[in-house]
Image (cartoon, rainbow, N blue to C red; front, side):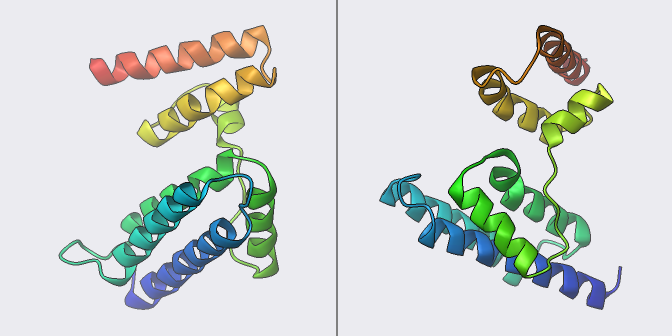
Length: 155
C-alpha cells in the first residue's frame, strides 16, 4: 500500500462518516431522541478524528477497514428512513460502498469467521426472530453457528 492509496481510502471513509453524521443530524427525527442523536454524532466524530489524527497508531488500510466496518454496522443492519437516506446519498455520491446483508451471507456460508461476524449475528438475531424472517431450520442453524464459534474461541 502506498500513501496515495491510503489517502484515497481515508477520504472515502471520511465521506461515509460525513454522510452518516448528516443523516443522523437531519433525517432521524422520530427515530432517535435528541440525546441519542448527540451521542451518535459524537461517536462518528470520534471515528473521524481517528483518521485525521491517528496519533502513534500506524496508518494502514487495515485500520481504515475496521473503522469503515464500525461506521457502517448500523446502516448495514438497520432499516427505516435514516438508513434509506444514507444509502440514497451514498449512491448519489457514487461512493464505492455496497450494502451487504451479512447475516444472510454468514447463514448461507454456514460458518462465523470472526468476532465481527459473531457480533452481526448476535445483534441481528432478535430482529430476525421478531419479524418471523427465519424458518425453524434457519434458527437451528444459527444457534449451531453461534455455539460452534463460541466453542472455538473457548478452546
